[in-house]
Image (cartoon, rainbow, N blue to C red; front, side, top):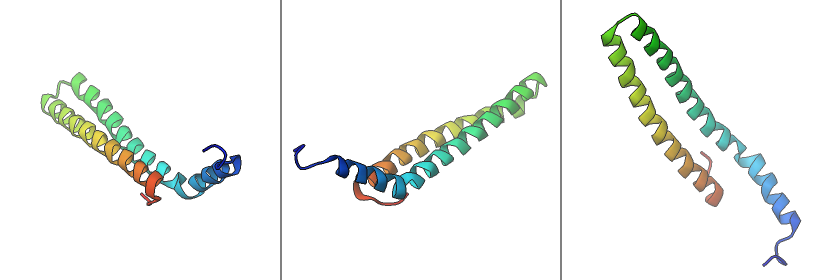
Length: 93
């Protein structure tokens, strides 16, 4: 019912979410950003290895990039579930 929920209720919910759960969102984003940064560095190293015709290093870089891609997808899934748990139950990350 809209009659039971006023603007003050909404503002209180936003302030609680900002004060208590903003760190959870920041931490989840930080983990993803670190993984993406490492993948970017590996892409740069892969391009350098391709130019210098180092086939073994090139294959290793591609395997590492694939593993980091898989890790990133898993971490994104865990982040999403953690955000849901935080939103519903108020658990910290």
